[in-house]
Length: 358
Image (cartoon, rainbow, N blue to C red; front, side, top):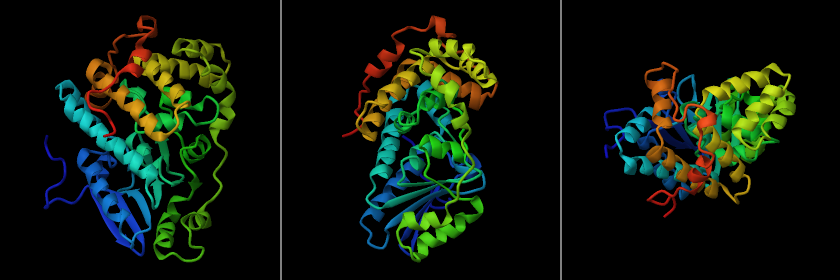
């Protein structure tokens, strides 16, 4: 497998530096909105290994280079290439190392702070969403948009979605809807709202450790109250429609609602991969019953390998949305009426050849 880490002559794709007790990890692929590749994941693992036993570091801060966002997700072009060329071992390796990073962040023994400023989607949620202290700003755009490419939320996304209020988990997971700061806090994807212009001040405070000294107390000095979430106002039709037993039931309930947003959501679901929608619905609902994040990651690992090794929709979705950008994916099957009723159960029962956890 090609080593994705940068050569010594290149600028690192992850910048790591420690000062004043603060270890700062900056994702450094700004032209790609800091999309993750295997080299970046490995660099983060190496740094977290070193800092875990470094007595000079007691807070870790994750942020992103550039003005566009923390992380737009994983390198889906690379994923599509691996899938279409039959390199299942490489696909499995990538997800195992990424999911290990997601769990590592959630379980890290030192306070892990994430600035989800700007675009934070997919793999970006897998890092920021599991941090101990999750900061959003007025620029934040959070989403799990995997169904848009015929896939399913992973990186622990199903764990977060399963714990959102009411039926927001189903809504956000199936539609890939973008959350602003208020929505992200309400849905349980973030903890604090700090205006973008104050992030440098918060970063300095975490480094200099002025009183009050705990990271949470420092964040509260910069925390402001965001506007009410639009999701609160939409809960009535979301909770009603997304309580349907199947995706087809959900679409029918949406069509019966008077709200224009409900009708538009039904139209959107009609454009997405029937397989991806059915699997996502089952995944989010089963995640509600799982005991912990690692269990959800294990479930997601089986699902993503099912998609990667047995289904055509993921590479087709990436082709249509990211590579050719014709926005006209040809799903298999093309509509919900043709979907095998047992597809989601088959996906949940799938086991990858190589286990996620050693």
